[in-house]
Length: 181
Image 1: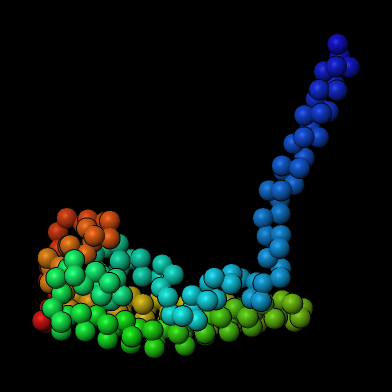
Image 2: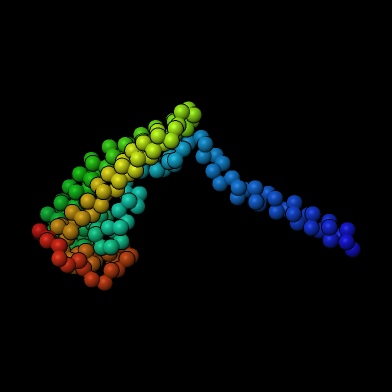
């Protein structure tokens, strides 16, 4: 009886080893990335000026994005001038954010090269991560700025409708912001 129990325990333990080994290697395969800290999709998004969730603080608090407002122009009943302004803001945002995204990629690649070349020091680590943080902050601020600019384009009712159409009704439109139409 004891030998059967020991055999059963041994089998169970051997079955659990592969599962735990898989969990211990969550980054396997990522070492082939061009920039280790960024996926191919993230690099493509940065190079295309896409938001990548950087403006969620604005978007989810009732500050519409220019692209999505333009896409919803019929549902929001935008005037021609409002639609044109949303498109202009989106175009300007892309012009600004594409080079900023390239800066993020370059800063991450520089850090990656230091680790790969075994030349990293505490001082260069601090400097490199500071450059990455600054590049990310500038990119995020740019995306958020264009959401803020949309408050001057849309009416409070259009903003409330935008939020509802995007699936996050906020209840009340923004008040206290100067709006020009």
